[in-house]
Image (tube, rainbow, N blue to C red; front, top):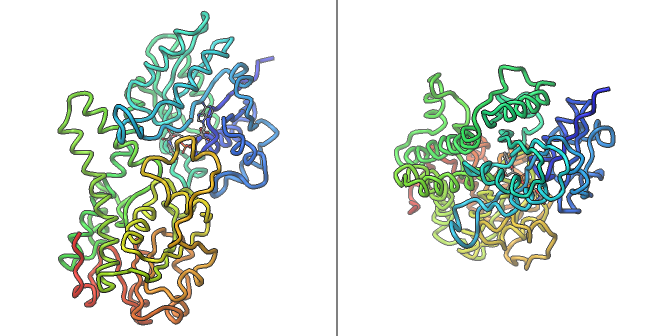
Length: 483
Ligand code: NAI
């Protein structure tokens, strides 16, 4: 009988959890164990309430948990038993020391690699699932081989391209699976081994194989290109507001060009999420280290425009309300960085709320998936501190007193002077805006940071409406915002 392949994944986060659940679902002949140093996270994966919200995830986990999918804190045991080890630990931006604010912090990755080197007793294929700087595989190889007692380790780069909010769909039907490996016979055999896992459900022509460095860099490049599209359309949105063009019409017309394509061209208050900013900063740092300042500056601009877009939004809110929001209640609808996720890492809502708090606003927040504790923690935290271990533990933040969090959009907007829509949750399209208007102070403002409401309808109700990149109301024209 052929020995059952065993997979162990280090890191039960947004990537490790869903990815491994889908592998387990699609490969009943493979045993998959996801391990983590956070027992809270593992307990949640083993409970009825999973630690992350992702459409379709509950269903997949229910089908395989206890069958061939397991969640455990016994890291050493499962590393020792596994044939293939995925590493999908967090790789945040360094907050101190060399490269602080730019370089990837590989502390967690390195300790994972050392752990593998310590406990492995048989040959392993080690798969980089985390997004890492180019050439990380070389460093990992050194750590593994320097400590190995004659064990053969093969390192592969298999970056993950799923998007939060559509992770399960993306994993079921990926545009491509990318596997980078050494071009030696052992390297090729390892690539083949991983290919066989994905071949259970991914068509052969979507499984791309490259050398290690191309695979590592492709992930950074893909995120840089995606973020660059958003910053490009957001830059245009500022010009649209200044000229009377409509950014939706512009991006529709631009996207009709088949060389450009229609996706990822929505203007908004800015991109967020754990990856875009950190991966671009990391790319910038690598360019600088390789003596390519022009290339570094080119990509840096993508982040600068994103920061500009967030502060432009805050300025628009403040300037249109007679240049002050001090002690005015502002309702914030949506705090997650995008719809269909509860993830708030680097969400533009953090910067917008901090900006409004800086002008002494009182903020009332509603998001269908984000808890008060999480919001308070996010607003109390310094930039780049998220994703570092302190914040993986529960801690009681010093609550920002000017902020309240509710579970109801109508309560959040009651008596507010303005409403800021910061996440494109579908339910925000269908709120009873006439009822909201009734309950608000007048003049009542809506600042639509995602262009999801019908601004004409809202104007008929009586609102003054700001939509990103759309022709301005007369009111807003009279109250110009300085970016
Ligand atoms: P996450 O923070 O949700 O999960 C990482 C997990 O690793 C945490 O639960 C942490 O406790 C655990 N961990 C840290 N050190 C460990 C160790 N030595 N042993 C075992 N577990 C350990 O992070 P997320 O979002 O899953 O991201 C992981 C990686 O995947 C990052 O490199 C990220 O850039 C990349 N990525 C993330 C995507 C996303 O949409 N979130 C998409 C594609 C890639």
